[in-house]
Length: 471
Image (cartoon, rainbow, N blue to C red; front, side, top):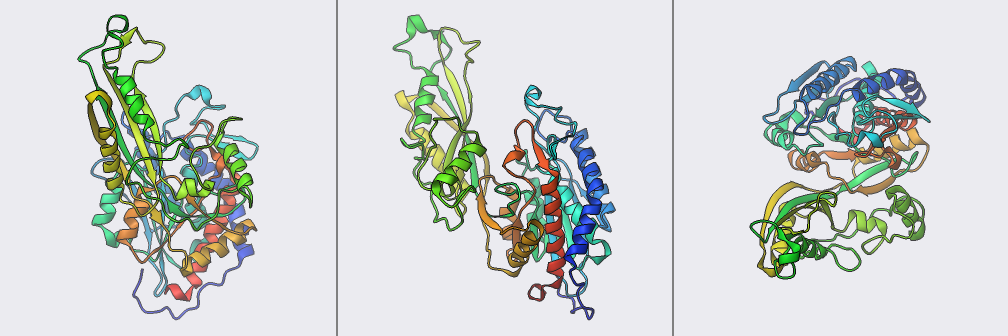
């Protein structure tokens, strides 16, 4: 964002073929650097060592310096890993673009489910496998690859923000952004933590669901008692909890908590075809729904995913089947998550969950509902010049029309940026696709898709340098 006088020199004309060739020439280095990042187990969750997370931050800083960022520093967060920040000032009269990604990753989970070690990058059938290969170290390399391709021809200002606690729901970067609005001031924000609805189909994410989490604890007895001696009269905490959780949905499986809202959805349906049947078939395939098992909710798949609330029981603490005894359970807990359409205050959603769970508790059971994480949703304004430039860039990189869809996941920083830089256009895209299996075993990224996304971002940055309406 610049109020400097207009530059007398003309913008650098875009030679799409030359830029594409530069990106292709840089892909061996991009792959090597991505593999180095994947080898670092940068898990920022409690209980994991901090040293790999800090190593990843330093590695990202080195990559940004190598990509031509003259001012790169690590910003220490008050509670959590450092954020990497790089900046290259805008030429006079040119816009500033803020590029975002994150270097932290989800835990690997059960390594027996992986076909190759999660932190040993492995290439199979054109896909690079490894934890973080797609989410979101490929996003980092999209930014780095584009900056390298443009080099001295970069004709916009660039700020790069790469955080280290996105996966662990850290809120310190959001707080820092709110306290340092000048640091993130920009005309355009590119969130490199998105993906395409299908391989080879360029996709702009135009909405994000909000999120609210609670943990509910049910207690009915001071201690477990023998089910033969006391069962039938003694209240079972696990049964009480199950009855409570069952009220969160109606018979179709749609959310049934009063106060959760639905919005009108104007975007497309889930990728897969023009008809609802084809959309449902694509969704069943991508979600791995077993044959014969019905889907939940009502409306089109797109409406269910991006315009309606969804409630998921994320986990339950109770005796396991393997260790269960013949006892009436005295205490049980569950973690419940609501994903909600953009526009609704997630704090209100969390309170609605609390009210509902307290109201439906049977037998006057003792119930406690603890507050968990919240995150606001996002609904993009898509009529601005940066969106038009992005669609042109994506179409040129992929050779296909651009799809605009919602995304079920939440990127908490996006909602904060909409308040801190309200006039900036926010673009969300990236090299993930349904086969990337982010957060699951055998996460991977298609190197061809990564290359196309780097070409798209390169063309976008070049195009923004030519866009008079942004200056």
